[in-house]
Length: 208
Image (cartoon, rainbow, N blue to C red; front, side, top):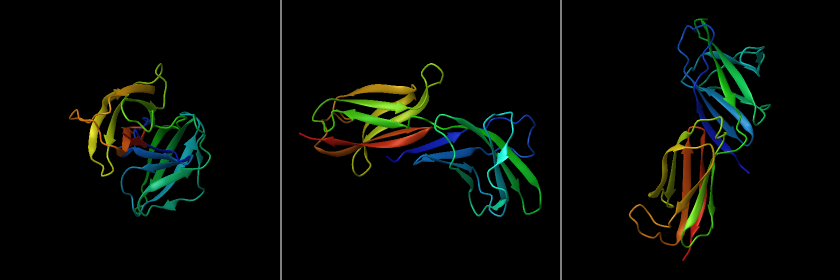
């Protein structure tokens, strides 16, 4: 089953202030492979990435040589384990020879993907929609999330949720109607759940 998580994470502050402001990172978790990309364009720079299992600990480089950044400066961590937290640091060397370090960035590989489930599906009336996001309701703060019901053309039929969403599972009761209060026609629809930790699309079949 294809898993895709798109995560936009804030940087973890360094003990010492870097020469340049940290740009942040974007993380994709797809087919159980973690890809970490430094935000921004650094074409012409050389870079190397370091990783540690602890914020204050030994960092090991993931490549023995600096690589040329032709667009995105990224790494694919094939050894990342779901549920663990890793710390990554990017070293960039400009054509002028200046060396700049960004990070470390904390990345927790999620165990549970962002997802939406519908029951019953197919549906000919009311249905329960369960939204699922990684994390613990006891430890983690809610996320800003949006869940839309769209048709095959991508048009929004119903705003199912917009605002803070608790970690774990949240159940929503849907009355089978669109935003105008009209019962949806038979056909194929999709539930699009979008959060800062990723997004998912779930197929919904409407029957009469």
